[in-house]
Length: 180
Image 1 (cartoon, rainbow, N blue to C red):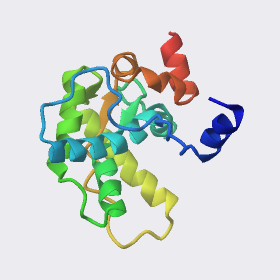
Image 2 (cartoon, rainbow, N blue to C red):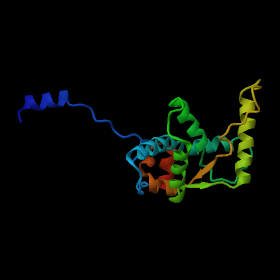
Image 3 (tube, helix red, strand yellow):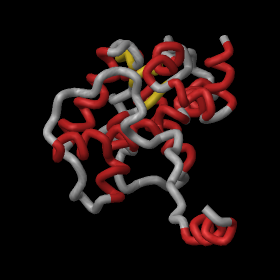
Image 4 (cartoon, one colour):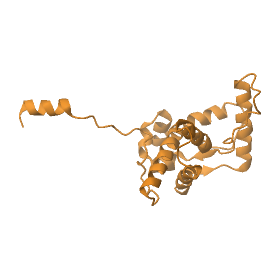
């Protein structure tokens, strides 16, 4: 191939998108056997949940900073909050809640997510509500409760890195978890 043709090919070549940290389909564990349509919905929920997982330690630090000791490892996610965001972004036309629940169950089966005790969930939910009331002065439209307040899960960073090794490149928290 001549230099001119190589140059022309490089100049006109379409860029190939590189996968991001939170793109679905990068897990090392088997995905559920689903139809093509259901797998697309699963992938959409997985992508949104991965965004939350990337920031799990950061949110855990925010919860810990409220001064109440919670019996967690400090890596927290709220799948219900993630699902609400997905519904907002898709104007309600996204996957059903059961699909998000199946992604959570799939990661829980792999040991990457663990449920908190009811007491821990209740305590964190009360803390979330109090934090919203304090953050938004004059918050009188309702009592501050959100449907997802009791939907808190704990991320096992060691196991999550087995499922998604690429998380080690996500941020400093994941880099530290990968090096431990």
